[in-house]
Image (cartoon, rainbow, N blue to C red; front, side):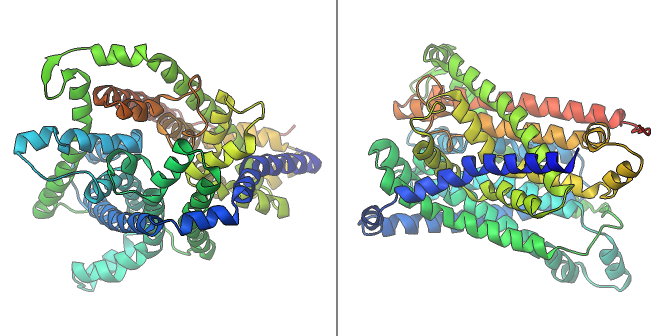
Length: 533
């Protein structure tokens, strides 16, 4: 690849991201006016709504991170069997929309909920308590995956030295484990807090009169078509995400000189392992119960009035264009996976394997989407692309989903490229082997695992998202996940349950295919042979 060609590719990518990320955000900021800002901040309920959002997010974040730490330790610091099974079960909530968690709580603990009737409960799930529980269910798997990954790669050497010196386990925890986790824990806390404070699915479904900022924004735009006030609230929702982004970037910039010399292999301890089995089993049951209720509700005529088994809700869903919306979701998810992976791969190659100012600019702009909540991105696209040939088509849904979920897959492959020897291209040039040949014959075969994970990430998230697409979809382009709000509005919870179950099944199928593909790749590791040209 000639230098001029690589520069042109970088410039083209910078232009694409500027049009798809920076300009829509600028358009949203320009839509705000002093009058709109004053209307929002001086509104009687604004202070209350802001306080609601912060309170719910802080409480739910604390619980999510605490549970994630507990279960991460159970998985990584015990010798229990079936760790992969527990890991899969505990991350199942990531495969359904956030709004489904709110609906699951209504089915279980609502006025006529299954557990409400079974246990004779009188408490009201709607409001603060319901939002906190739903938000924990929604955000906990993300925190769990982040922490368990960090703990998996912790070096065993300091612990072995501590054992030799006779240092007790509790002192090892405070002196070795916590300092090791501290930087990662900051990222986990901010990521979880941002995820919760910008989500509108759970509070919209189960919040009742307890309104949060994302719900207020949704009401202003969808209910009142007030884009000015919606832009003000969207800008406020950007603040925690931007703060998390800056803190995480600064933490990564500082880097770390630590490296793993030996993985931790926990010894058998009957008491500890028994407690870990009990903890993982209990939380696995808690995760499975709402999914089981979706299955039950799908095949019951009208809970709790008529418990007759039926397929009516499945037929009703498809009669109301469920098949078309499922097809829309599959088309969007597949194309987002293909386009997203191709774009992220080429972008990461330009930023990780090439030097220069353009590479640094491209890297910065590529991870910017990480700091933009889905609702805010969706609104900015409405304001920027309205009236264009893209507006009202599946193409704009593909574009917004690609940008919304771009940063994480990009960082996956960026980190993979940084692990591969940096001198590879220089050696290739010495041997008269071109960059494109190294790209296709060395880098792609060496990063197939990461490519598969990237495709899975794009597909699963595009399949279940409701935030970024809620303002952009119309009757003909609606995705399946948006039917949940449609059915909930007319109290067809049985149909909503079926939609949630359908999304879960599709995503589980994709995850299963990914697992099989990765297993096959491990058996058939590529042998790279490059001859001189």
